[in-house]
Length: 123
Ligand SMILES: [Zn+2]
Image (tube, rainbow, N blue to C red; front, side):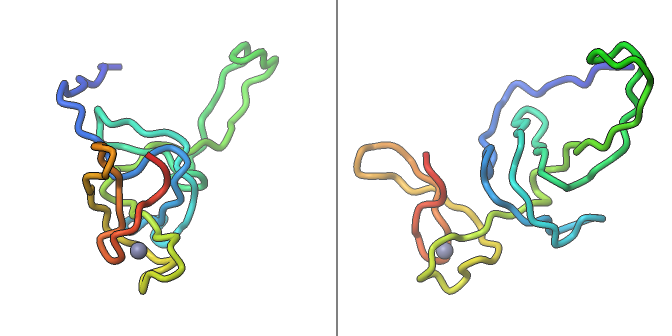
């Protein structure tokens, strides 16, 4: 198999591990899950219960005596998932929101919901 070339510019993704996101396109449209892994180099994320495929594992792999097919989440494009606003006062509370970045008093940048300007998750 040919190895995919990773792009050098590592643009930050709008989601990070541990975030709860909703899928907005494809077979798993509307599925909500936690981000298990991010792959900024490829602009992809692995989300719990999203894009689940059978992976055939050979005997001997991970101590298996017999070959087996296991269900495993495969990466999806990061643009196909959206974050959910957890701020109860937000008019889009519990629904998908776009993410912005705002400079904080301490000089750092935090991800915010563009609707209510409240920080999302922890940064
Ligand atoms: Zn919000």
